[in-house]
Image 1 (cartoon, each protein chain N blue to C red):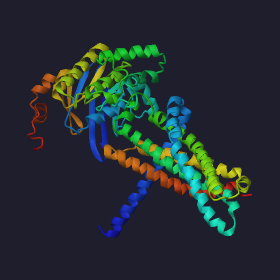
Image 2 (image 1 turned 180 degrees about the vertical axis):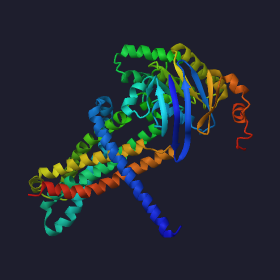
Image 3 (image 1 turned 90 degrees about the vertical axis):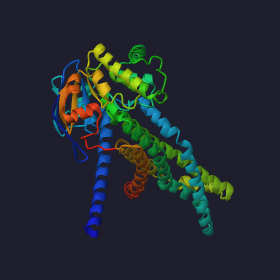
Length: 265
Length: 248
């Protein structure tokens, strides 16, 4: 076999494999949405997952939000003071946090923390036959395992993002006003004046969609784990990498789409 | 009660089952023996609806199960119990919750009734008092017995055992074999036991079927299997590697 044929074969295999995975993810998403309406919601499972995803992720998300806002405010101050534009620091930090930094960084962290945990837990259940045991006991695994995780992440991601926005904007204020001596009244007045409610809406819509992406990819990886303990490690890594990359790519298209939809007039 | 007709299954491009025919009568205990990787567990998974066959039919209590959707399978799965090779207890739930799980799924909400039924099932498998333990705190034999208690708590008509004694010491394996016999007699349920442990096969089987190259190669009572002069069956039963292509 020639080198060209070998490379074409490899490339073809990669494309087919990616299409197969993407198809599997979309099928699982459809099955999850169908199961949400077909079966009763398991509130105990949902609350347990919301505790793990929502409550237990707060420290990491708040810390990220706070330091992202603080660092961004400091960087903006270093640049803007040269032009005497210190009063624009507030809205710049606020809009950047809402439109990009808040939802993207918060959800990347959720992909790492929650996506990895979901994929690892479901993979372990898969290789120890617990998923088959569920089916053998007459329980549909998507309804029992995927729906509570999916709902918990989709509901928690916007709430956590909102919390990251508040801490980020608050810490930006603290750095600019208390450390660099920007006038607090101007800072806050301009922040409120130039930050539109649509900016916050963009953050929440993005977080919701990122939640769907992380939960679906992590659950799909977990439910399709290859046999053996090595499979669990591979699945977990792939879940985090795939969810993070998908999230960053989708973010670009969402930015274009949401700006076109919300700011067209 | 159960009839397999011409079951075929390919996995990873390899033909694992090539036309399995098997019948199980009510209350009968059928043991399926065969070399590792010959498709015994795949056959059980097909009976339970965990894997679809490529060809052939599974007929349970007169109903053709092959081709049913996942949801349509569920009423039949409640009549069939399965003991998995690795026990497959839900490791995030206590022993009590594992055993109560099938009952809760069947709609039982009364905690007193649940408590009584779980206690009764645990007593049958000699695990009374372990309700609060987590699966990680149990030994291999205890896990198998707890999983067995979970599988029989809804009193199935047919019980499937996937390698019930694998990885257990001879004493614990013997206790599991006695339990299989006791449960069959007490609950009057039919059983299919997949194993390559001949001690277990002779002890629990009313009939033994030897699965070879994807087909039932030989069927008979334990006595007939022991007297069988066919070299393949004889070497397997006596544990001889000669003629099997396996060398040290």
